Image (cartoon, rainbow, N blue to C red):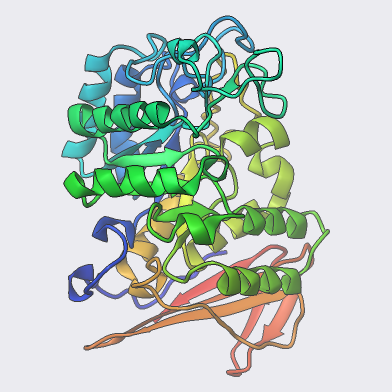
Amino acid sequence: MLFIAAALMLVSCAEETNLRHPKFAYDATIYELNTRQATKEGTFAAAEALLPTLKQNGIDIIWVMPCQPIGVITRKGTLGSYYSIIDYCAINPEFGTRADFEHFLKEAHKMGFKVILDWVANHTAPDSEWTQNEGWHYRDSLGNLMVQYDWTDISKLDYHSEAMRAEMKKAMHWWMDSIGIDGFRCDVAGEVPTDFWNDAMGELRLTHPDMFTLAEDEDKADELTETAFDMYYGWSLHHVMNDIAQGKATVEDLWANLAKTDSTIRPEAIRMNFITNHDENSWNGTEFERMGDATELFAALCYILPGMPMIYTGQLSGNHHRLEFFEKDLIDQDEAFAQYDLYKKMNNLRERNKALFSPEVGAPLERVACDNEAIFACKRVKEGRWHTNSVLAVMNMSSEKQNVTLETGETFDLEPWGYEIVEK
């Protein structure tokens, strides 16, 4: 259930000064493009056809999963993992050519998108030429390249090597300076020394001051977002949402998570709010598997809470199956479960109501007291020079019908996993 009233004009960020992040980031929604699975062809040329739909649905930033050539000797599956890179400054022929990527990027920029590239700085493929350089990778006592976890198709880089650091920065410069991307999503960012990120991002921002950066990390988010990164992963929020949908957590657990984040991570850092991504979909199940009937409610919550909402490939079209990670596996186009209208409405709401903008521009989250423990009730109120923007959200986080009276005296009757959003 979605109720939106009294729409207000969008107020420009221009009135804000000394912003920590690029101005485009404050009302943006980010989209993760899985090039392999997004189209039948699995190429950048084919992905261009998706751009108008993404634009119509209110997407602003496109995060492209790694598109460089993949290692061969320990490759997983037929096509391999995007994250086992053999050459940082090349395009995987599975996705097309450099010209194809540049054309995709040019068309995206013409439509107003920003495009960031998934950057894998923690490791390379074991058959990368970098492994031939002494000291560039970790090795065991026998001189064998070292892997992490069950990632048997990678070799971990050693950041004690100044020569390797310099070459990594050089590769990042190539993508920014020669190709023209707008920033990076950095894989397992907490596994790479923060001083490298501070150095690399600081150097890149000298010539690209509006670049946007996303760290795949939450544990070190306060440190990583001090200077290097604009945004971090809201992993703990994601897990709480899953647990509530499965009856393993409560509304109070959600409030406790939000309070902990507020107290441990710098307030200007942007949290990425999401109900799915490439890892969750492939390894832990689709949002429909994990959240069931609560899927729409938690999708909407990603827009109400401070941060930036993220949409993954297939999320708009109602994809209902776990995408193979190392093989070709096309997303579902299921009209019965398509979410285009939902995300279009929520993106429009976010873009026009300054209360929902990302920190520092948006409003803080305030709890609204009510008489029902199954209800998550909150508001965000942004006082402006000429008028006030506000959003009230009342959400039934249970599988039963609920009636609730707020401290303001307003009453709501909500269906199982139902919600109302009131904009003033």
